[in-house]
Image 1 (cartoon, rainbow, N blue to C red):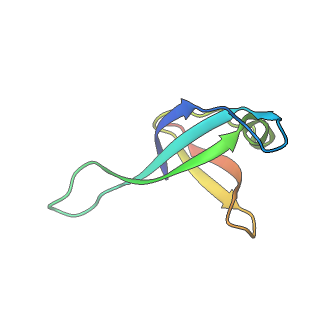
Image 2: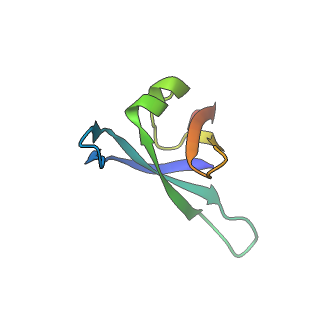
Length: 83
């Protein structure tokens, strides 16, 4: 998947703790003779802590792989290639 955008997004958890991180917007290239560009796939939230653990900083154009936990929550993000 390709990062097509990102935006800083902080919020306060139910316990009052502030969570800081990014909404990361992902897409994939359209294919076929009658297609051009990218299709928007999803928006995923990654906290600063998870990004640091993944040793990744969001960059538009990067190709990444997202790993999920058993509850289908994003667990890690891995750079496949720079954009």
